[in-house]
Length: 217
Ligand code: SAH
Image 1 (cartoon, rainbow, N blue to C red):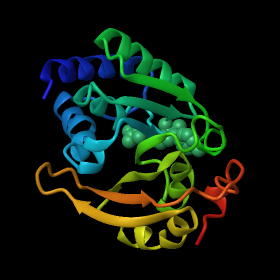
Image 2 (image 1 turned 120 degrees about the vertical axis):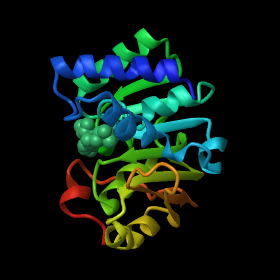
Image 3 (image 1 turned 60 degrees about the horizontal axis):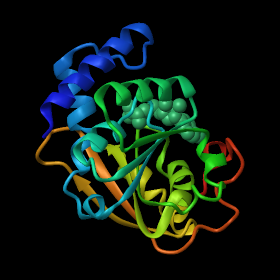
Image 4 (image 1 turned 180 degrees about the vertical axis):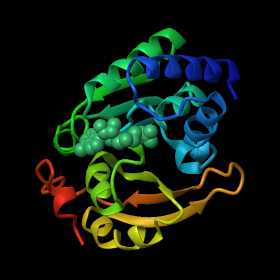
């Protein structure tokens, strides 16, 4: 693990947090556990190891995307969020840490998911704490190349939510592959892996707000 870079990341993120409050975390140890180690939970998964292009959808301050980009300097990361000021912070941190494999993209999943060049472009889409599973599947799967994966970081109490997303996942061309409980790092997260088998029908994602207001069930 590149501990010097992670240490600097914590310092810069906490400095930014004093200016613009983006996380409630103030303490270095807590930051390490909740934002760095938790983000790295997917490291070592074959779906992660095989991916060349990885999107973090709804990245916020850069999690899980930034720690993963540090861990995998040879992979390309696209960090997406609908709030530009968060992306500016990520850009600043990447510049200061000389992280060159991260591109930030501003926009809503519903709009970017229809944009040629971004749709169907990623081997893996990761996402943490963005939306309930049926909504998230509609936002994330359009970005995945057929044969690629979507990995949702979910809390351990999300099993009902995950089960309720089966119909949505299949309507979007995907299949639920596994729910992976962490044993090693005690994060409280499970990683839900969805494979995209075929192209997502062109009608998805629906217009902005629709997947949240009226999820596929
Ligand atoms: N993944 C980060 C942030 C979670 S907060 C973490 O775990 O710390 C959820 C983030 O998703 C916010 O930054 C919000 O701006 C973004 N978001 C919410 N809806 C979105 C949408 N439709 N498209 C893109 N980003 C969205």
